[in-house]
Image (cartoon, rainbow, N blue to C red):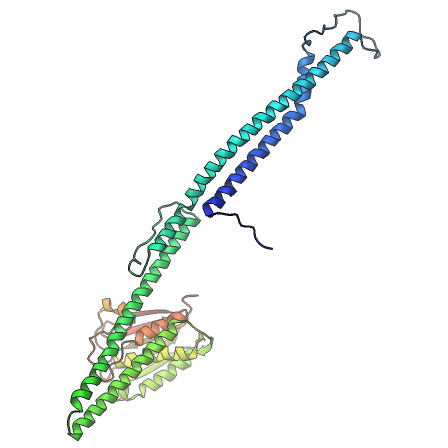
Length: 395
């Protein structure tokens, strides 16, 4: 069944609704008053007239004789008086009813005008916060997302709507700011290997020395590998930010042990004598197995890469939390929250082999959010970093 919509804007609709309800209530009240007055009007008038003789009709003479014990015919003067009272009562009742109806209709008309005016004013008061929200939404753009409605109103549905809109603007500002920083950093990171490749091609290959050509060839291959890892990291970050397309039970404890074994046997870990140990308790997580594997691998690989020689990495799984702790250089506590942003590094980029693209922890945070997990990190007093990924922290 098609819903009936009132014409006009929201304020006109609310005015019609409020005004109609007020006029309907006033009409019902006037109708009830007329009905009640009409029901008792005849008896009231006849009683009032009966106690006072009608003009021109003599009242019956008082008699000391007792009233007859049985009803008898009325005296002619009594009959005249009774008919006069009845006629006068009917005329008075009709006149009173007409007067009451006229006054009631006039009062209803005045009440209707006042009701519509009050309804228009009331609708404007009710919709004023909506107008503020609409005006703010139209004015906002990418350059002034910092503005807020900050509605000054008592608690209620519209206040909740304005606060929700402000919260949404907070999230949008954070997302837009993160996207701008991401785009700028990605452009910078991609520009660096391209500049190296161009310089190597223009300068390094302009020689007939076979050894120099071989060195430039190896350098170009390293830069190409770094660029490929950077692009793969960007694609993975984009995929994880879009959420999960499928979910299935994943044995996180077994996954952590497998990744710890692989990273402990890697070329970098063996060359620097870095030990990777795992200590796990049974834990199954609903999620994407490929993304969860990237999460654990990025954490452990990052712990191995940012470590010192003869250091160690500890991987723990307990109480629905994955914890990766490593030894390494001192990490300033104030810089820890920024390490989860894309292209953030503890030290400036040196374009050296095995340096990484600066996307490891940002990918970890993005995959964790997609799985409803919370990511936290803390600097170790003796150097290194401890990262906690707690699953089931968010619905």
